[in-house]
Image 1 (cartoon, helix red, strand yellow):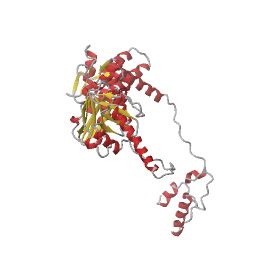
Image 2 (cartoon, one colour):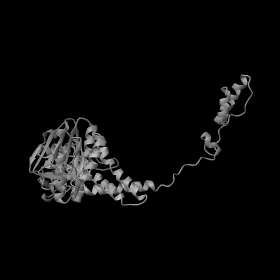
Image 3 (spheres, rainbow, N blue to C red):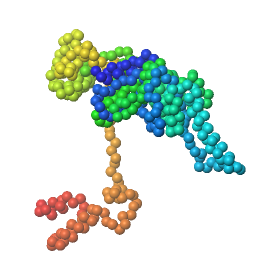
Image 4 (spheres, one colour):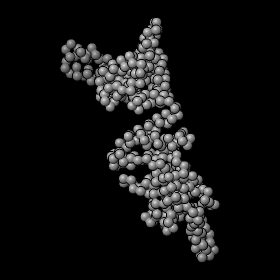
Length: 416
């Protein structure tokens, strides 16, 4: 009820725009620990966590209507010259001109960003404190160190183009959206772009009590995205809940009766293996698999309209899973059956196993490398044998020689 509409809306927007194959780059999943899972929401646009900011960020405008967005891959930060740089001057007054030139470089970049008419400036590289205060004084919003995937989604949604230089900026490279806002989500602040002209990008924001729970939710949402994508591409679905497996098993059992010889056993075994799917569904839900499988066999065998009947997880019986909305892409089901059959054939094709032969090197028993000197030490077997002989001789017994396999000798020493 919560994630299913989100996933369908996000994938459907890609299908309408013909970008279904770019699902991983256009649909983002963001995790915010804390809160309830019911607080998760879908953004029809782009949302990403607030990046690192310098002093002066609090003075920026946090909300815009129909803003113009400038996307950069430029570092807007005053940096000193490299360590090996050398400047020679003949007059001390020339030093100030060098310092002024450094400041003029950064100011020319900032002026170009403002003059192009942008309201929001995003960059993949850092935006320093000077630039942050400069934009804040002029009513602009800026964010540096934006992740590559996020800035590409912003470019796709707003229609802007990422610039690698501030020279020659024009209105044609700027993107736009209906509304931009930086708002609080849990303990984090998010930059949200909505009502974008290209409504293909989406962001699913997940909430949860722990990181482990959110990570599991992300995997489930990812699987759901792939299932919806496959359903839209295949344009055909079948009932889930083990209905297809039971129907195929019924057909194979009937077909096996027409086969003479050992092939009948093979087909019957294949049919029996298919019933593992509904059986496992029953066990996972805590139901009696024997009763439910018996009811499914009877329904598929006696009722002509029973081909879509599968396991009813909600009530603990059987139901028409197609009418209940439990669907699976037909391509996925076909691929699953084919992959299972191929895996079984590969395993059956193994006619022997390779075993590492016992080493013939005498030093292998002591863990020594071939040709390695033991440094005057005796092997462990000889050391133990000598110890046992010494104890036996001290008790008045005779020496038995070196300790070999030791099985019969140990039995005799115990009185056997």
